[in-house]
Length: 169
Ligand code: SF4
Ligand code: SF4
Image (cartoon, rainbow, N blue to C red; front, top):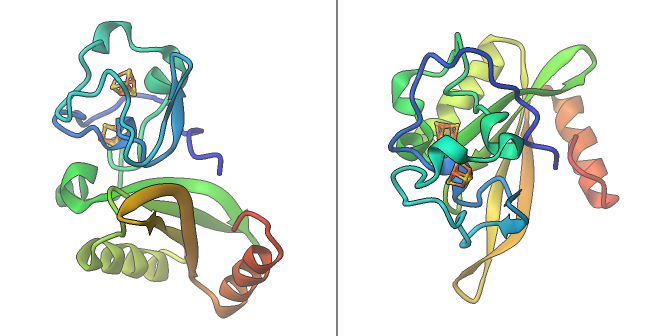
């Protein structure tokens, strides 16, 4: 899935000590090295980046998550290292409705954060795709299962897309 398309503008919030997007939950490549669940970036200290000043433009400097973006609707407690979810707004549109994507920091999005996101989608007339990391033999795989929240037709379309081997959006 094309997660890393949010462009940095003027971040009002600081990342540290979050390293959610550095630790493989979005599956990126940094300096030619793959970063995936269970395989954090080689520069991630777990509380920051040991090469922050020289971090690559792509993906590091270009990326900003939904919590950190300017005018984020996400409350303070939804910081990814705390809420265990990375939110990416406006990743697609469905019948004119914005579609947001939520990826767990860990195996699955905790109930409090997921409930917040569902309520937000409902009250703001948005659609939501959220995922869960698949685990095999106690190890994270590179696979996720995706679920949809929003109008019933949207949910049915996402299920049909997934059944046909297509990405959810
Ligand atoms: S997930 Fe968001 S807050 Fe956390 S390090 Fe990445 S951009 Fe910063
Ligand atoms: S280089 Fe730094 S900012 Fe970029 S993914 Fe690695 S730890 Fe994160």
